[in-house]
Length: 393
Image (cartoon, rainbow, N blue to C red; front, side):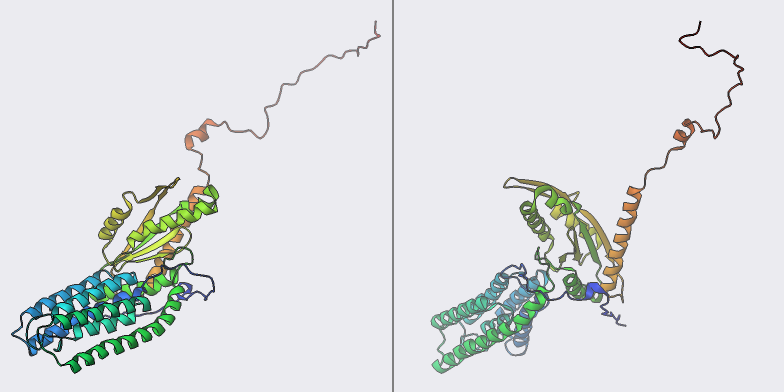
């Protein structure tokens, strides 16, 4: 029986912030996070189709299974380590181009030659990656694949009809250009949505983006039966940074803190900045593994040290991990409940600190009790005397 995982999104935290005209800081070649759930299908489809062809038509070509394995490795790598930069996407696409070149250079008769059935090894990755890559990176990939195609034609020992070569060259260029243009249009809307998920100062996800992208990881863990850990990272000293060091040093310090925390943002992990001094991390792992990962990146106890260019700072990081294996609970509700509990705990702690300590019982006994009425003095009868003055005799 399949577990139904609702996707309720309620509350202010799940509402996108209003669009602003202010320039949002983003890396120049950053890849929207949801691309990490799309890219593995490219390598997986190439591997599956090559395996299908090897089983159904070319069982006498065992070399094909090597390429099936290599394509599967690339797909697994992109699944485990989603690309965060367009240059990473480009490098992975070029890996498929290199494998395609090896396939096309096989010194066998058709089907492994340039005019054979495996021309898709350089065309399909190019077309699919063209939807994901920025235009400038996609044009580079097209150039690389054209070079691969020309090299395979020149080095091929199998005679191929020139008309077939021209047809395949046209296929390679025309459909790749169409994919680049369509990807350009699709990314405009996607980039606009992504800016509303990003913190204006740090470039990390904001709370809305954390819930939005965290929901994808939450669903994956629920369907796979994996534990997931939500970690709150508090750095109280960030609030006093401007007062102690000034605005310029504060901006520099925050940038370095964000860079240090960025080491946690790997693989499928989701990292966000919730406020001036609070960050959140979502990891698809149990609590113990997550804490070991945080300790590996930030040290034990967790801290961030800055000692460069005359700037020396030390930030202690308060870590609050919460593991969940709940089924049938939306991530937005889980997140809201946990952050409310953390806020309530912090409020109780602040109240306890501000209340003056009670007087110890021993100190109370040492203080003498005050009497309402002072003890009465004995009545003394003074004799009647004559007032004396300076002129009395």
